[in-house]
Image 1 (spheres, rainbow, N blue to C red):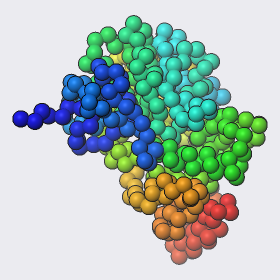
Image 2: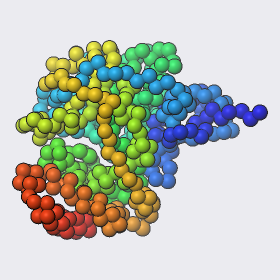
Image 3: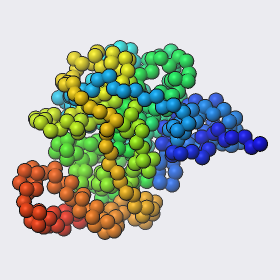
Image 4: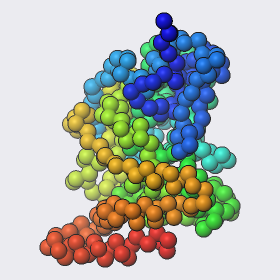
Length: 416
């Protein structure tokens, strides 16, 4: 009788997210390889010649979640808040709460593992941070898949770590922690994520920057800059020659492509379990559900939501409270709704076409999907006070005509 395939290559109900925890737990060195697929997404593949069919990879893998008990926890408490340090608050993606937690973790003897954009390779890697003054390296959103294996494989059972990552990365580590003795001091923080695009999109964006903006190379990138405000975030860059660039999420071609959802990995778009549940000790996210009634810096510079899911997470949160301005709230994690995106296959195919620029990819998408183009402009209008407070209350025919004019004037990406 043919032996059941217990490797990471076996057919399953879900897709690989590239978290790399399977490679960490694999007892055969070099058996599992993590690489980029044709769309620029990370994926794991084992070598059938060296695989010993031990099943350890499947036990930690998101792909095989229906084979193993997920054991999600309910939140003990949920808060919204911001960092009391206004500089940290402004330079964070939302309220700056993660920095408060990580600074406190370092005070308590933890080593931090988080995602950093490497300007030498133009890739995102998880790195070790041991000093509070270095936390700026991992601050802010990186809308790209992080290469985690080099960091995760170096986790030492004799040391204390706090790891920040996506729900699937943290889910893999939580399963690894459960199956292997000695990882009791591994504290896990995740964030409710929209999903990430592949490196095909970002590589085309690099081509755009080099040909149309600056070819000296990136010194620093902020993928969710609040130069205007939290709602109208954009991409800001500093180049090696000192020149600076900023464009809103509606005009910058990388951000515009990202918020359409067309470049986001299918596995992320179809992920329901990890969006509304978590294996983490603490979950941090934008407090979009509590924006109503917020004023001042909390509205302009962002507001965080913090879910506490374990005793260990609660202990860290209590220690970090002196660095936060917080408010306890009610929030039902099981009812979280998520944006459902209908993917157009031509978009991903166009990203693979080396002859097409990123702007041309977007132009082809808008031309083929005029309704999505209109929605994009409507979302842009909703970030402006003149529309939200006045124009949206016009009679429908007038409002529709105004949107038509905005589409015509705003959406010529070739000229923008």
